[in-house]
Image (cartoon, rainbow, N blue to C red; front, side, top):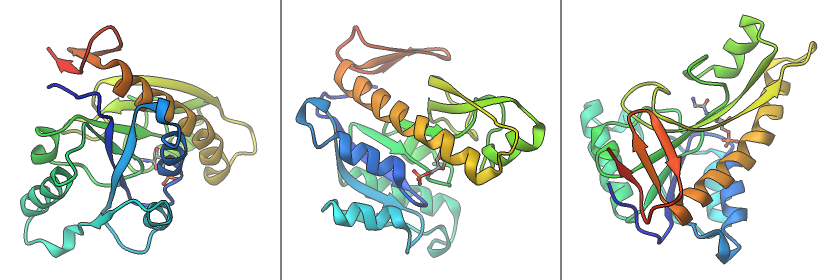
Length: 211
Ligand code: GAR
């Protein structure tokens, strides 16, 4: 897998798109090295698509329900992403598992509001809170075919406070998550990365590669 230095990002969203907005804000500075060339979603009517449109970024929506099979949707979203020739796809609150057509064609970075491998899935914040953890956080990882199982690129911790509910804790995590995602995407596109087994290293090479 080789990644050009062009830093063309396709960002996938399913909700409010605050991680997307953080990437849009960072890429306003040319020295960041990456720019969002398209935003994709699996549903209409979400704030993430509004944020993309306000920034003048092309958008596309591929709804699973519009395809006879999951495999057809997998092929369709991969084809749509390919139209924008990204060097990196960022799944930023995209609440679908991407299939082989996308994962085999592009490196995909994912972000999750918990310290993986604990609390994967759609309710990472709720599940961590219910478990009674005192520290949680966020994880940026390369996507694979599993649910939040890919090689971990970066993590940061966030405290759980006694009166937290899911929304309050998620907002505290997202403040850290946005900064971490922006930092890691920028470093990956500027410095490249390698993957050896589950170990991801950023820097000291001209492009991303898997071993
Ligand atoms: C983020 O916290 C992201 O980690 C989470 O959705 C939120 C999206 O926020 N993703 C998952 O839980 C995926 N398992 P945003 O739409 O404001 O960027």
